[in-house]
Amino acid sequence: MSRPLQRGGTFLPACTAGTATANNYAIQPALTAVAAELGVPVSLIGLVPTAALAGCMTGFALLLPLAGRLAPNRLLAAQPAALAAALTLAAAAPGAGVLPAAYLLIGAAAGVAAQAGTIAGRHARPGRRATGVATVAAGM
Image 1 (cartoon, helix red, strand yellow):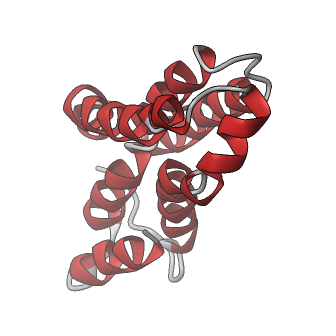
Image 2 (spheres, helix red, strand yellow):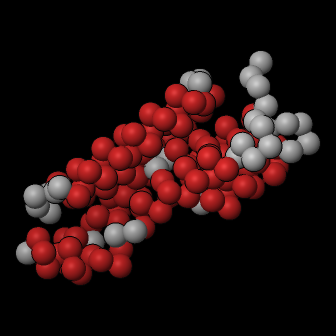
Image 3 (cartoon, helix red, strand yellow):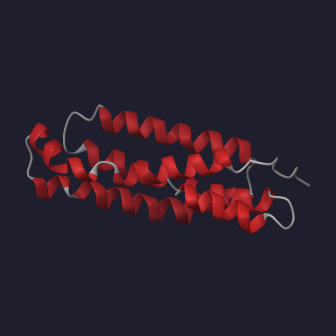
């Protein structure tokens, strides 16, 4: 049996969820500037947010079940590390071909947001499970 979260123990999963989710959308206001810098049409850069959402759906389908199989501390460390690597790839993208691929990975790693909610609910004290899930949802 796992230990219940300490009081305030949903703060880290909530921050993780909010940060991971924000990465899917943070580039959207800058798409025109990114297209100009890479010298490609805006319509091509429009694939970037699409790739992020496709990656997010893929992450939900393939990675969300890991929340019930892996230790929460490992999961809440590994996926944000993968997210950081994908963000680094996106930041260093030499061209428009790498950027959608990086955002596909960013979206997949952002699935940690849903996992954080599951983990917070499962590890909250009895009678506080809904509050734990709601705190993580507020972080998103």
